[in-house]
Image (cartoon, rainbow, N blue to C red):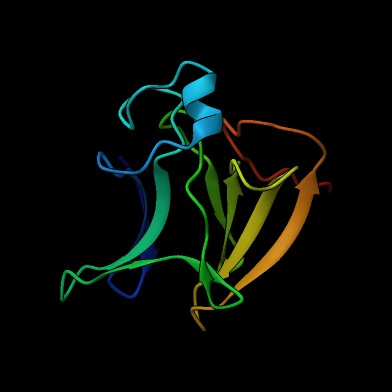
Length: 127
């Protein structure tokens, strides 16, 4: 699990669902269980640290699909927004979603062409 504190007693978590279904495509690629390192069983959620409530991140009313890959720093907080790298089995491209910390809304950001695992996202500023 990867956890980032967002402020206001909320945290962004990247976690694994040990009971996530394995698609036919993943099984054909040799992935036999959701705990396999590259299984599409990882997801993002917001945890309210006061109540313990966990809410999966959604975009356009639909939960963001499970992401493949390992636990790593796939998100960065900058200017009251969390930039979150997601590589799903469903999407042709990897996507960076943008979570607005103040409003709790998610928008689709940049797409990275092709299948791509985000190991780390960092902010680079030009002076």
